[in-house]
Image (cartoon, rainbow, N blue to C red; front, side):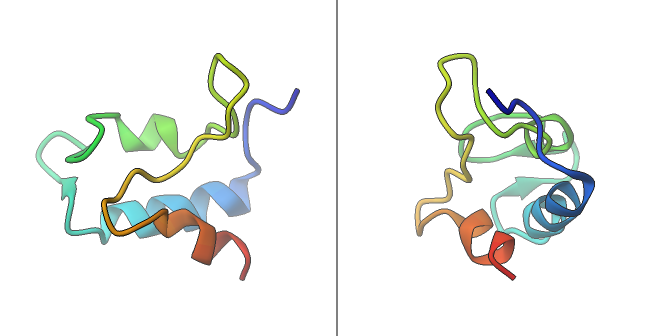
Length: 68
């Protein structure tokens, strides 16, 4: 089971996160789920084997950027 993403995917994710309206710069956390984004952005799957996704209320912002 794949646990981490590659550096290119991480870079895309962290760029999306740090420019997101829900990103809390003071704590480096997601304002929706509360995760530390410099950690979560590396994860491919969680402990239950489910894909880690962006929890933005308007949809997963990572999907659009990972296909480019």
